[in-house]
Image (tube, rainbow, N blue to C red):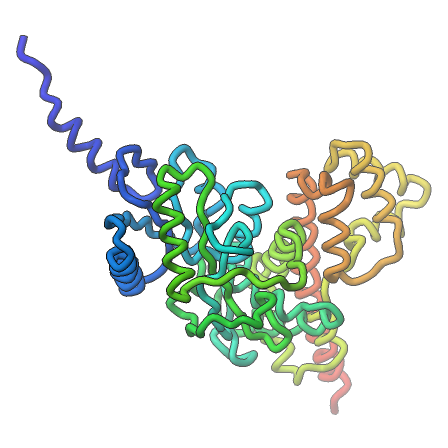
Length: 397
């Protein structure tokens, strides 16, 4: 019997090894994952090679792993063979990796687990009639810009602007719309303290870090030393605490539900509102944030009489498995009604030490509540304006 032909197997294995995202166990080079352009990568590689040569060190070959917008860096860092270095990763992803212990200390005096490599500025929406923003659930820059519009003290005003922008004649898609290529680069800014500012301009902070589990820790440290020595990286200056990941995820759920998933109804309402001259009362109703407790809970409490509490407790039992989470939820539902703002999102993200937020059924229920509320609100605005128009027409001579 002739030996089996294994050539196609070897060729297939070679092809798999080249696919992005695969664990390439035969890598012998320093693996750097980055979203930077080919020109930036070429300049960085040449600079690193020249720096090594000038200090009498051996050449280190770089194997670039190209990141796409929306790639899950925390998941990448814990896979069996992660990249050695993350270059140009968003600050929030690096913060999350540092908190989870997925990064190792950098060879820079006083540096934290990651260090800044680039600070960029971007204005996704020049004015309310600009090109619009992307789905904040899938585009980190869109979420950062939206956060900047909703800073403490002016959440309602910022939310109204987001509603106006989402109501313009364009569609908000799922795919990330903004990337490093659309951002104007600035030199490292030693005064930068946070990602969004209060003028709507995003300061997009990128950094570099060494992943715990790196197969080439010595070469990775040399690369970071090169960045520091050439001024391409500096320690991350302390600044105000960023909003928690949980609070931001709830914010992305809120905006996705009320501005993206409900955009058909929103566009229809906005068109009717503009044709009517944007009367104040319907405009306010269209642009105000959803309430907490949700409208469906208020309806149960208002209409069901003595059975209301039994229905409320039964609903809490369906969407929260832990008794402490159910108790917190019922107590919160019985609190005075208020508009959603950052303090509400923070409360929801911290309830029962964060365990309520981690309940998939709670998140699913909350997204559905926000979507249903938005669609009903937008349709109601259309009915109010059309009824008023019909009333005027009926009384006109």
